[in-house]
Length: 77
Image (cartoon, rainbow, N blue to C red; front, side):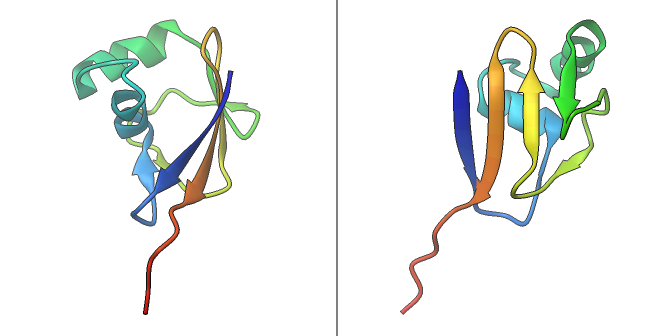
């Protein structure tokens, strides 16, 4: 499954992204999840739940799919 997640802030941490996607329910669970499951950030293995993710980053979670980060459209007038 490929999914795009729109950010309203300049970045999101990997732990926050896992919670937003309902893969884990807490930061503590994110730590254990990352220890037991392969997660690739832009093709490189990543296990730090505090790693900052930015728009255009690609996160591949084995068994879940690929997540692409993008900035949310702002409604400026």
